[in-house]
Image (cartoon, rainbow, N blue to C red; front, side, top):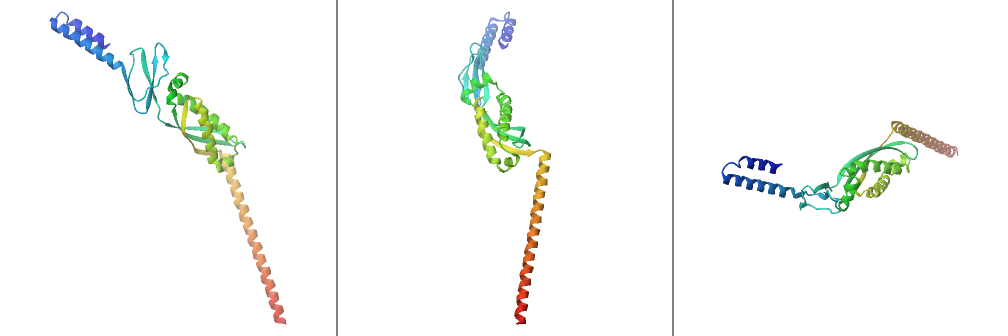
Amino acid sequence: MAQSKLNDLAGRFSNGPKGLGTGLKLLALAGAAAYGVSQSMYTVEGGHRAIIFSRIGGVKDDTYPEGLHLRLPWFQYPIIYDIRSRPRKISSPTGSKDLQMVNITLRVLSRPDAALLPDVYRNLGLDYDEKVLPSICNEVLKSVVAKFNASQLITQRQQVSLLVRRELTERARDFNIILDDVSITELSFSKEYAAAVESKQIAQQDAQRAAFFVEKAYQERQQKIVQAEGEAEAGKMISF
């Protein structure tokens, strides 16, 4: 485009002085050369990697690091990946071992495997995390949560989190995705279950309170018996 505009401008002045026409042609050639040089280079920013797509051979197997690189204009163009860890929150409702509905939210730090970016692009494209993470997170959460009942999910939360992280990390490797961290940020139950737990806790507290009063009454009774026996012994000693 730029070259054609310069050539048109040179043609308009071709009837003018000979030196002016030659200068404009040289200017057009310089502009075309500068444009060609700019299109032959690309820059990979920090925390990124590049792969090359060729119109002749498709995606190349090489991965290019940060810095300035060369390419063949029109025949090749770079595809840039951000390889820094990115956070993502994923929520999934699932059922526990005792058939209670549980809402779990995961915070996942993920990044593509920099050495396998050509495979990532061929199979998933640039939006690899959108295509993979929600599905495998739901799959792993349902598998892990089904091994625990509702009370265990609360009392053994750390164990559940470690199991989710291990299985999810292994599953993500199938798609050339690296998970730097997986943690459970929220774990909640249905309103019905929460109300049942609250009622159970209240009943336990009432039972403990009743047991306390029974024990207190028993102790008071024993104390009175001991006191009465002591008074009876004292009365016998006085009568003698």
